[in-house]
View 1: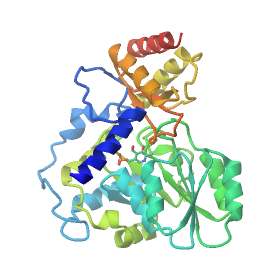
View 2 (view 1 turned 180 degrees about the horizontal axis):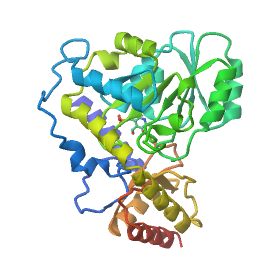
View 3 (view 1 turned 180 degrees about the vertical axis):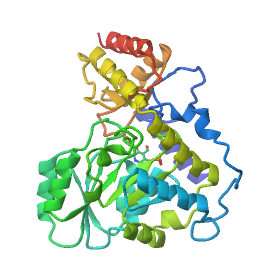
View 4 (view 1 turned 90 degrees about the vertical axis):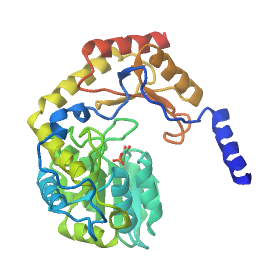
Length: 370
Ligand SMILES: Cc1ncc(COP(=O)(O)O)c(C=O)c1O
């Protein structure tokens, strides 16, 4: 068939450029240095088995039809307290939450400024909106201000991640807030990689820096350090009401079922009771960084997301395979997920990785580059 031939051609192109992807399971039980389950909460049985009564296996409809249940509303109240916001609205995933906010809130005539390293769901959300949009250089306040100065009319939105998913570095949130206040811009922060980590209870970077009241919308995702699935947008009651009315990603999809919503609450409660998990992980990050202090092309990160830049798809894949053969589950990250020339091996550290495992991993990384 003509279409399949065309698709095959595109797949062949990926193979030629070294960027071909395929699904892989960790069949050899390699040591996990790859998952976003930074604290190991996905495997805590008590989060799953909470002896709550059986309610349903499916929400049966969208929240605006049959799918709005007492458990959604109860957990949203819990989330708004947890994340110190006036209100919170559940979405089925972080991807959908970012699309939901960015495609519906900014209007024609408005301008969105987004960090150039923003996750693809931020970029797609921005494209789906009718607003003008421009990238600013990664974490570059001067470039952001240069772009803010040029905007003459409409609402302004500044969109950042609190911690970048591939580089593990933080946005300079305090400075971004100061600048945005000066230019009357509304800030949207994707807290995907800080939810469950920062702050005594894991309430993320905005709350840890006490900036929550100056941020228009915060997106918390539960599939990473929280170890479950789903997401929430935290903000004002008006924002919540607006999203319920205008966000297609909220309206036209079946709501999360009871178990999925309940485990979000259970996991956050568990995290709040176990602040030592983040402390333990931080000491492992320090160990990893000290063992690789001379490694060339290592990303500068104090976050569990770490990386070694190889600068080419084949080089990243070869290095990843070398570490897999030594028993470590790490994955190459290729363009277009990261910019061309910045292909890397992404390494995620976990509270459950032992010091010995980390020491061995670093030993093999250092050996590879000798
Ligand atoms: C920064 C960022 N935002 C949003 C998402 C999407 O979140 P979810 O996996 O819940 O769809 C991801 C996931 O990779 C991410 O890294």
